[in-house]
Amino acid sequence: MADRRAVVIGGGITGTLTGCALLRAGWEVTLIEALHIGAGSSSRTAAGIRQQFSTRESVLGMRYSVDFYKHWQQSMGQDGQPIEQNGYLFLVQGEDAWKAAQKRVSDQQNWGLTEVQALSPQQTVERFSYVDPEEITGATWCPSDGFLRPDVVYSEAAAAFRALGGTLLQGSPLVQAERAGERLISITTGKGAVLNADVFLDCTNAWSRRVGDILGAAHLPIQALKRYLWFIERGDSMSEAELLNMPLIISPQGAYCRPENAGSLMTGWKHQAPDVSANFAYDDQDIIEPAYFHKNDADSRPFETWMALAQALPPVGEFAGISATTAGFYGTTPDHNPFLDFDPQTKNLIRMVGFSGHGAMFGPFSAQVGLALAEAGESIDHVRVLGEDAELAPFKINRDFGAAEAMVI
Ligand SMILES: Cc1cc2nc3c(=O)[nH]c(=O)nc-3n(C[C@H](O)[C@H](O)[C@H](O)COP(=O)(O)OP(=O)(O)OC[C@H]3O[C@@H](n4cnc5c(N)ncnc54)[C@H](O)[C@@H]3O)c2cc1C
Image (cartoon, rainbow, N blue to C red; front, side):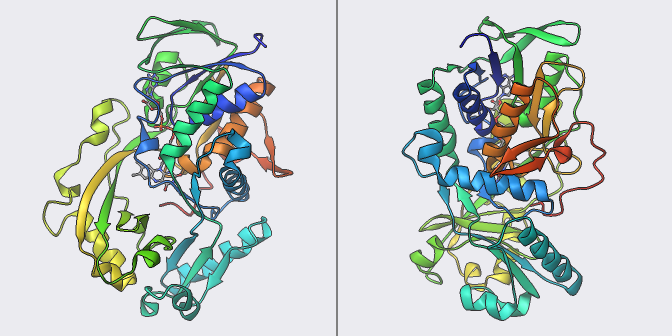
């Protein structure tokens, strides 16, 4: 079917999954990627996937994403296993925070996440013997949450994209665009390919500000903020099996960890960072500032993170040492919800960007929204997933940012 042509810009989890959704619906799709598939945040992510959010729309959307990743073979026709459902455990300290957490659990249950629970300190330590019950007022626990294997997601999505007949152009950055009034006519890549389409989709997340400028699109408030991961080697204080079964755990202060493999714990903790959305280079993703490098002083952020985790999880304090640091960018909006909507000044451009710390988990839901928008040809108010309507108000570009997502990592 050649009368509905789409060009997807950006070959991360969002772009590859959205490209596949469009192809399955009969669109002719070309995907352009500046470097190679997964070169952006999608290969630098902790890739946690949780349904514990503070709005009905994100809870429903992430219930859909979990279901999609769980049924990957049916969804994508690929053999990999992209999701480990070890659960998410939010540790909570203080009476006010505990009251708010219990209210969120009750809301999430009402929104269909029936398996989420509020646990007392005693119930928490009965399930997770490595948690210090003296350090928490309670915990929220959802066993169907977990984490993804992001390389499986984007590489198998790219394979499915090719198998479905999509055209994938790597090493092909967007460099120029031709417009006629409020419509995009064509875009040009760095290799000189000129691509015409009925609909264009911006899936460049942290790069969206500059990509938007090239496209003549609206300036969206998305900050590119550096984020790090550190890997701590397991010691004798925890068995291989215990580490492998560990959920993604968030300490009361916000430091988080999850198993990378039987010998290594992945950790992270957000920090103040300057917005570099106007001018970072691709290679800047790999630059590690001294205060964030694990071979530096014991008062650096990796050690603070380790100590914050050790306070709530004493056996982690006995681990053998930090072995590696990796880095990438969040593309962050003022309310930590992404933009999934038509561009306000370009009638045939869909923006799917600004995922903050949740673009890997949003992938399947984003792809459903992107497809629904492309099919409608205009901004829409809801999308149907799991037999329910997900309202798209929290993801509209012209929203007022008043209702920020409360569960941000
Ligand atoms: C340390 C860290 C931890 C994270 N933890 C989590 C987590 O636990 N769970 C979660 O869900 N998310 C997490 N995230 C966020 C998540 O990784 C991102 O939101 C997600 O990967 C975004 O995917 P994307 O496909 O939208 O963007 P990207 O993967 O960044 O892809 C965008 C692509 O666009 C390409 N591009 C840029 N400019 C151009 C151009 N001019 N022309 C063509 N292509 C271009 C880039 O090369 C890139 O490949 C984390 C991120 C980081 C950095």
